[in-house]
Length: 181
View 1 (tube, rainbow, N blue to C red):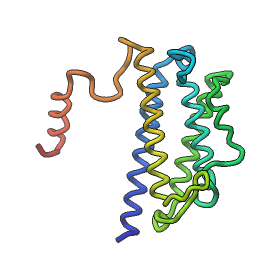
View 2: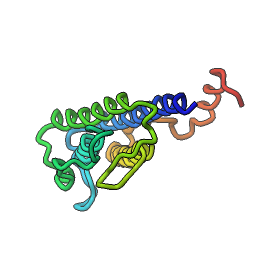
View 3: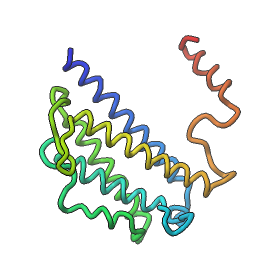
View 4: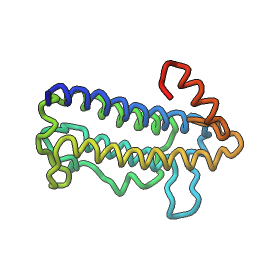
C-alpha cells in the first residue's frame, strides 16, 4: 500500500513541478530582454535574478538529492541575486539546467525512500518534506515571475489561466468534458 502511494505521489509531484515550469516558461516568453532585467526599485528582484536564484537552488538541492546535503559547498547564493547574466541564451540555459536536474532527480527517487531522512543546511527532512519545501519555494518565485511579467506587459499580457470574466464559460466547457456538477 505505501509503495503504491509513493509511486502515485511521485507522479503527481512531477506533474506539479512541470506545471510550474510551464507557467514560468509562458510568462518569460512574453518578455523582451529589457523586461527580463526590469526592477521596480533597487531592492526588488528582476525576473533574471529570480531565474538565477531558482536555478542555483535547484542545482544545489537536487544534485545528489538522496546522498548529500541540499546546500552544496559550491553554491554562491548571494551571487544569484546579482543581475550579471550577459545574454538571454545564458539565462535560458541556466533556467533549463536547474529544471532538468530537478526532473532527473525526481525520476531517481524510489517510492520506498519517501520517508528517508535527508538534510538541507544540516537540518533533517523526510524526502517528502524536502520535496514539498521545494515545491512551495518554487511556486512562490514562479508566482513572482508571473506577477512581474504581467506588470511589464500590461494590456499585452496573454493570460496563463482563465481570463477575467471567462470563469462561467470555462466551467461549462470543463463540465461538458465529462466532469460532474
